[in-house]
Amino acid sequence: MAVGRFGIFPRIETLDLDPEEKALLVEEMGKPVDVDCIIQGATSPEVAAEIYTASLLVVQVDSPAEKAYPVMLAARLRLPDELVTTIHERVDPLRIAAGISPEATA
Image 1 (tube, rainbow, N blue to C red):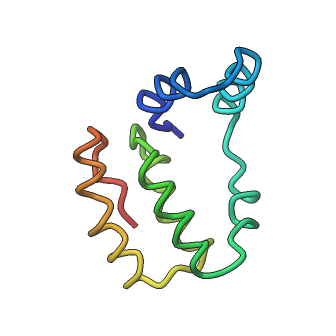
Image 2: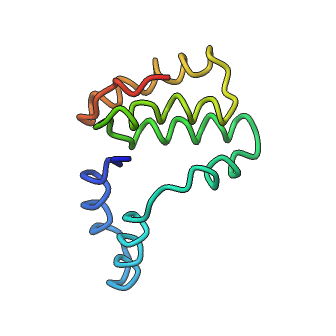
């Protein structure tokens, strides 16, 4: 899954971290996403919605599998369709402003 690292990595450089901490953060960003771990972190419906929203803000759709990711994530988080639609209505303009295609829809 392509994550919007183009905006994250430059920001890491601006953080008040020592070189070792920055290197660790960059290393962690390079690791594959553990979806099961993400799902387990959804301890309430509110947290599930926040996880989904955050994913939409950083995932770039570069392949059919990545296009399917938000659909799968919404289902695994058990988000109601109406809520997913509302989240997209709010997030898609932000994605466009950040140069991320809004085509990641559930």
